[in-house]
Image: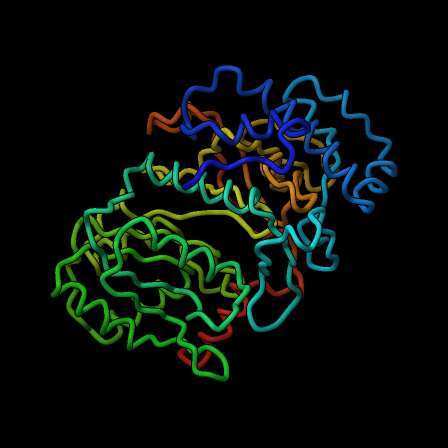
Length: 386
């Protein structure tokens, strides 16, 4: 990727320096001070460029000089992820927006996120570096792709489809199969087409990379068992990388370890090659499972777990709302986003994978809501098969 630069290097020098760190989980020397300065710069940037954000900060009576150490980030004003489902508040001017993504599928409320060149490319570069950390960039090895996401429509703005197609750039494409076929009047889950593709991939012998919604992946494996099909033996260099969760299908969700065990049994993919990803269109920092299936936090972000009643920061190990913080984004004031997910935060010592950074565990979604995400819309496509 070409050298990237923030929209204004004088005003965002710490943001640039933080996001230029090529090793996502190593060499943390000086990082905390850089992160704090980056958050101050981010706050001032959006305050100066965005009338909504200026009024928001004024209403909070917030002074950026309150941030002196990482623990002070608890005081930093946050916005709810759901806020972006109702309001469009770009900081970037229209001519600087290079990408407009939504978090929803065919129905429901949609988060409208706008990205300038720096914001989207710096997030993509983080994915590059994390995939490189895990040695998943293999330009010499063609692979077959199975994408449990929407087959693209012309000018699609859907975030999940954009992400999964972006991930196909880390290994040469031999063939791509979409699980959610574009019928011309919507998308339909092609369960039997997916099973046929997996059988063909097993015979061909190339590594297979499987991205997308875990609910569809599970339903495929379940269908294989119901049909009493022989387990397949995919190339051991195959890889799964899920995203989108089980939203809308929580009543049918199984434990992640059970899903991974089923994948090993039915497809022969080793456990350490079965990974999950976590993120959102409102917060594009990539969180990728380690070999022990924990979400370690890269240098570019911080995570706070907030009490569901008081919204105060909780200590390690306790469950509360997941709060993502990062100064990377310059196009929308989404530098501090409170999610609707329940999670717990843990020290690096609690995971023996060797990664020195903290990690979080996802516990589930908080409460009930009528809002629909892309995963919920996708889940509706499963109904005719169940």
